Image 1: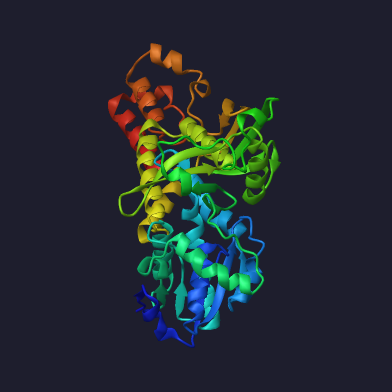
Image 2: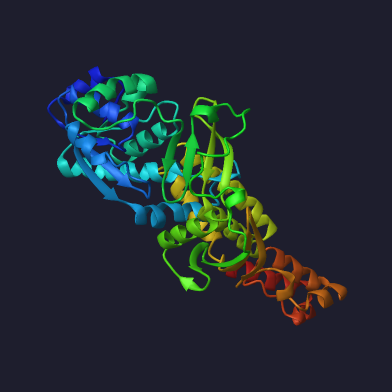
Length: 432
């Protein structure tokens, strides 16, 4: 059984051995690599391409720090294996904004375990700090996938401030002729193809106004938005987006297309407070144009198809699913059970939603669902209601609970009396 190592002295037991380190090329990971250099480990660094902007110095700093860098393109896997599950579960943190790194961290951990087993390493290192929920997501994911491996979390056991890390790194990199900023960045940014998350610096004081410039990159400010109204139609099948304006495309391509188009209209900006593991809340901003429309479209079709009872129960499960993955439970048994429930709820979520997009606003102008329960699909409803009988009561009750395919019980059901009506209801329940 592996152990959690929290100090460099504990990690010395792996001196001379191979280890895998999660490496982004940012301040935290470079500082950790510099410290590991002194331990005499053979470090194999893993950078996962999740759609972020890669630092220009990524390969250069890795080479200078004496670590072997491997870049894994996991963008398709991120879309098809992780984000899809979040779409089915309406994964909005606090019912508000799309989750982001909760998708990437488990996937990166899986790639790290694969690399470690490939090279024969028994130690995986990540540099997430205790103030970041990512520390829990990385650690619990590795524990679930490779319980036999040691996990080294230096930023948890021997936390250093950003200023201390800069002071340690700057002379080393300058001596090697590698340009490096001598002052900390104003914000901390975590980016993938689904969302761009901005936090730290001036944003930590949520009583202060968000600066009007220098924060957002994916979304245009109001004064620079495209002004000509735009109509977009998103088609979903079994809860997942499959076509945009009638053109079929994989989720990866659709996210890129929607991020570009909707970003020009300023769609997909969020501000919120992320709950930390120790009870404090981290103010942050997010940009997620594609996620904004995809999640909203899914909710619109769910509303059209699912009964009031189903919607109420699913909303509760959506929250449980989201809380579980945010706190690091991606590979838990409970998540597997919830995934199965989400797939069942989404079985009939097939149709399309049409949006009119204007600066800073999306408005749903029409929608259609193959198994929608809206009143226009039941033209005889008004007549049935006026001719109220035991038969029409069961028709209405069956429609509310979506028994069978949602069609009414035949009008001659009441002719056989109450017993025959009860038999038909039981038959429809068993069919469902």
